[in-house]
Image 1 (cartoon, rainbow, N blue to C red):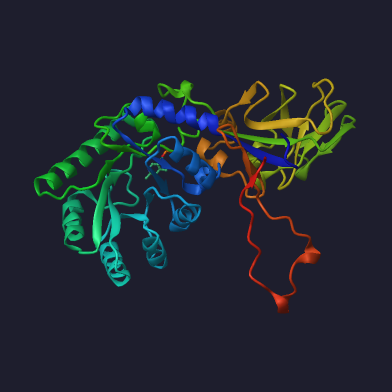
Image 2: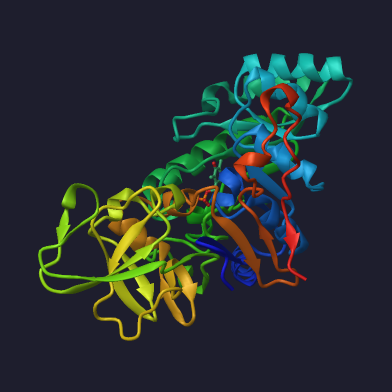
Length: 408
Ligand SMILES: *Cc1c(COP(=O)(O)O)cnc(C)c1O
């Protein structure tokens, strides 16, 4: 399937496989709260969430209330937790839509209590305990006091108690075990005072794939569900990549030795070279740092990215690829036609982490959902011609964006 210049194929069968792998590790009695923040790590949160819920995911975790509301608007009814925190303006719309909110301060307890009271509803909150991440979350020594405040607030319902692990290697890291012990000790004190309610959750992907114990009743996988995990973690090989970033050759040219290519002329042909141009750049998710370092798969073979990565284009040396032609597909990462290039490898070359690679796939890249029962495309933009935009004086509300088009 080809979708214009650049597209991201999202393989719903791979998500199914990965959720089954996670399920097998955590056991049937454990709830899965799938983390779909940042548009499901760039995969398209609405499409991923609907499919994941059909596959038995119990809840979703997001980064902001806007992300939560997008999911609610799309018809999702399961609990959605804003993992971090909310700022004042977000509170009321989030509560109206029954969004769960992570909480870590008296200030937020009061704000949520006031707003929930004014709205005549009960706000569902998850206490976030900072056991070593050092970012959000209440320190362990203040956790019980905050639980008491939550219990005393008539319009708050404690829906969970959580903490977040900082080490990328999970239980293989002694710091994770310290975090786990600190969390356990908060739970013990809270239990002694009868303050524990709702779901208890600690484990992210790295913790799940290193069997961090205790595992509690709910886990929060993100990256592993998308098929990406450090190779050294056990079981990572059973995962399948969900996203494949694809483009097509739009131009081929043969240049003589001595020809400079791209901004700043950082690459110069040493001999006659066949150059392929692909119509995607750093705005679409090819890191600028892959200039003169990255590789792309064309006709099953690796072709080096030469010269700088531009905003809208990259150039490849395809001199060694027989029969290369305009319109040939190119794989930036993921799997296609029996070949693969892992997000982990691309991340290493770009000197970053895999998370940033999929999150950076830009908003003009169509997400093409394949597999599952229902293939569909989420178009990046409605296509307007400049002439059809309303004039200033007759400006209307922006046209409804068609968010999903069935492919028949
Ligand atoms: C992002 C996030 C996760 C998921 O982490 P992965 O490493 O992608 O599995 C879990 N919990 C919280 C609080 C998060 O912010």
